[in-house]
Image (cartoon, rainbow, N blue to C red; front, side, top):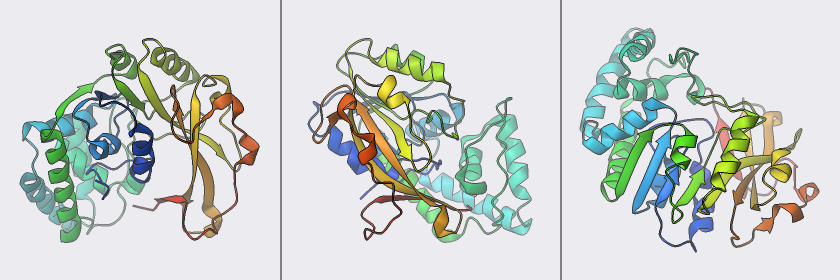
Length: 310
């Protein structure tokens, strides 16, 4: 059963976890390194014995450090969400903006959790000054008892995983993280997707993509990179140019944006590796034109990601 973390983010790899696990199954047990931890869903499901989990978003790191230290617990989370959820309902949603202002003043991890689970469309967006600026999702009864219980169970599950291994969390940008990598590490990178709209604490440029590739190849450690390959309208040209020294695996899934079936678009996700995995192909030999870009009709065998209103 897939562990779903308490923090949400668009582009979360929940439905890709088993695919990524399959790539790692034949790899020796190594320290797992993530320069772009995000929600932590991959690490928390693969459950390595040792992990270095980093992110440029300090609020994500502070939240998971709070779970690791015992400052954030399922019981404490329940009390907080019930109390603030009742106030949210009583004020017809206006309390959301009080919490948002309070969070932007002090950065409390539980306020971050509240905003993350009550904001519009699961966005994690910040302004140039670092302030969380996503509006409310317009559901004053957002924290119903069933959802609060679900979130608290997720906190407990993550606490168990962290407590069962040697996990280190660091707030730092990816260049610094990759400077700490050892040759025996296994690196998993899920950077913001270049050439597409990204929802992340920091922006992502072409120079970032080039630096990522160069730093990953510096010391011989094995790595896996998640990226997009093709949708109905565009191709990620960096795969065949910059990442041509890798092997590739692809998998089709669908994004739902809005309620209409016409908004259900196929996207091919790619895993790029500097080693061979079962079923992988050298990027230079991969035939992009063979990808199926049709709409769903295969009985649900492909992955689906839904982007709902909240």
